Length: 191
Image: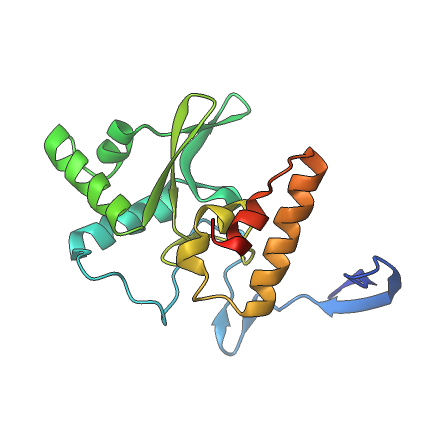
């Protein structure tokens, strides 16, 4: 079984031709290949958890990453009535069995301090995102928005060419909006 697709030059956008990509067989001598779209999260073997992250924290974050991250955004949330909603800090604590305010606050504060999570406010709503260097929602693509949210933590992990491409995309995105000072320029200039 194979899939036909178009080969496109990523610089010019020109169609270079067609190609075939074989679907992997679901069952081989090596065993069963789980479909890529099944629920799960990626972790990277060559990236150590930060010093100060407890084993219980790793377990709680694994539960969050496996069940409660929304798509490519890595936001801790859920879908409701066709919209994506963010879990509150209290709800995040409850998801991982921390019902006492003090324990929940300590856990979230530690995850923020260790840069495992990032708090972001958008349209008056607080949202929590998980650093893709430690836990990444199923998929193989790091989005521009997620890169910008965790750029300081991801910079040492990404090849320079990829960094440059993300910064170019950020600059283009800001130019479309018409902003005078772009996020990409602030990153490049270190301001």
